[in-house]
View 1 (tube, rainbow, N blue to C red):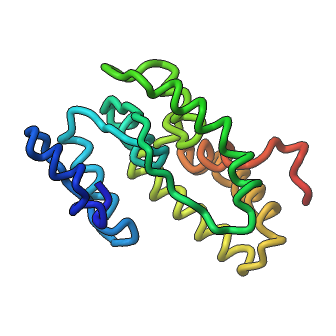
View 2 (view 1 turned 180 degrees about the vertical axis):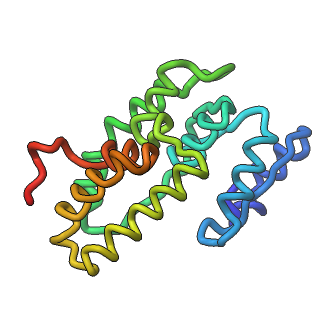
View 3 (view 1 turned 135 degrees about the horizontal axis):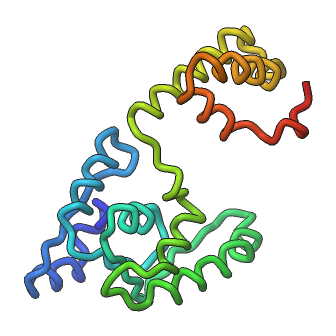
Length: 183
């Protein structure tokens, strides 16, 4: 549960039934995601009353997730709440339907999470390092001028084609089709 919900009566009731209730702490903390990952890796299932990154992380880590309806609903005092609700309502309804029963992760669950969290785009440490290096090189060669990034990236792509297969594949996949690049 989120850290401020640890003293909720429902948490006490579930703990009394033998469930282990844990928290990854404050979501803005530097170790939050690592703690969440550890909790999910140890979990048998994720039970949730809302759509959030915990669902995408759970499915990514092959932990079944189930949605259950509660009578508690967050309110948003933002001026754009109606537009936000209009946009998210079909997504939330789809989520509720797909995740309403979960003994295992269905193809529909994986597809839903892949659409919003790019589960098929997970990179290795080597790929992440190469992406970082590519970005540093583009920024340095373009001298920080964002308008020069597309042309600089194209020149690097040409360079990487003969010098570095990994960087070539990563940069090529990241760039729009060559006919849409404005140089």
